[in-house]
Amino acid sequence: MNIQFIATKVFAGTEENSWTVGFADHEFETKEYLFLQRASVVEQQDVDIGHDSYHVEINDQSCSCYGGIESAKLWRNRIEIAFLPKASTVLQNTKIVKIQFDVDDLTFAALSNHLALVLSGVDIFQRCE
Image (cartoon, rainbow, N blue to C red; front, side, top):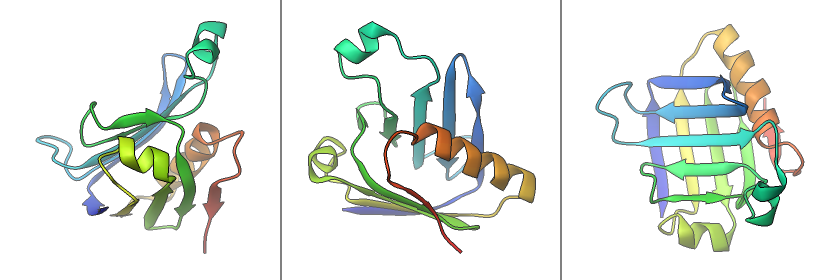
């Protein structure tokens, strides 16, 4: 299954010792969203339970996992994220998420920088022309 939507709300920031990136179809009464998060400080207990990577959530907390992205490609007005088979199964058989957006230069710079932080340590993030 592939998911596609236009995000009217895009967020990139730092919250309580974590980096976050989010895309939502609407700011309120959201039906479709993608949320990525990574702790900026990893504790041993996180490592012990496998929560020392980035976290992915699609449309509902029950559709989430740690790790599992095969590739993340960011263009100036869209993002495409492909998932590994094991993560796809956990994410209700989602193989690819494609999101279009329109943001100002400052928001895009924050988005690009925070996405790089969230996906740091794995060679999956690509900025595209």
